[in-house]
Length: 100
Image (cartoon, rainbow, N blue to C red; front, side):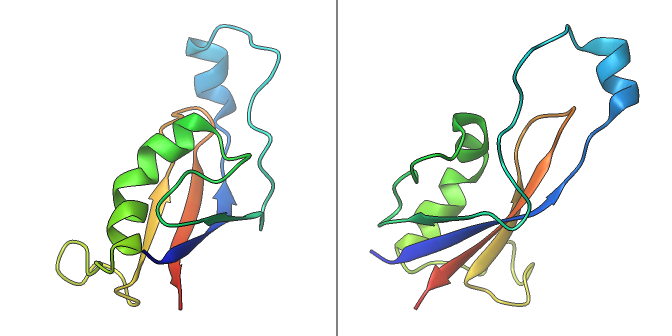
């Protein structure tokens, strides 16, 4: 199994949606732009939130097994994927790539 680098590439925040639909919460995402996590053999890296992991785990597992080329040529680097977490108020985009 290969290891994968998971890099925080972009973070968004939709205050209009938060104000209109979300109940107040005290703690949200702790991620930082450029932060890097390493998945060893398809396993969840320590410190990566469960919600983000759930969104990317099928891609990380496939890349760790040596697969790739998702959706017939979606990514320029076929051994990578760009995945966003499923938080509709504060989505975070992650670049996942195999460490050769």
